Length: 68
Image 1 (spheres, one colour):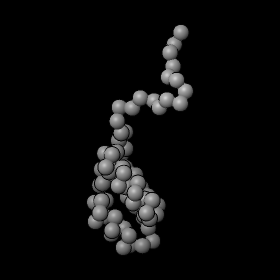
Image 2: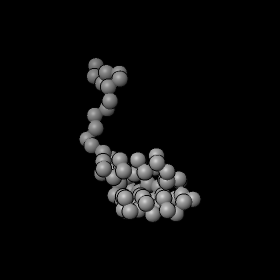
Image 3: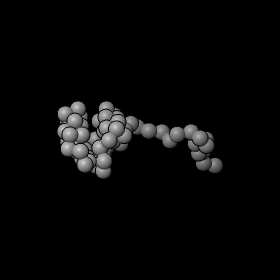
Image 4: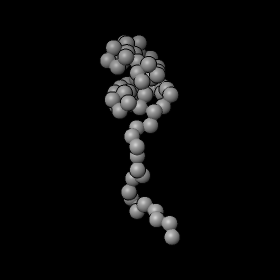
């Protein structure tokens, strides 16, 4: 008989998975929060995060705050 994990239990994790790059269509508050979290967790390097937005000043702000 094979043992399986109990239902409702998360699968074992060895840490954050690393991704090659990620992009955001729209750079509002939600994108800013996700960018912050992804960088803090070490999932993706700031240089591999891309964002687009209709407001150039918002893109400049994210670049200054997070180095994207």
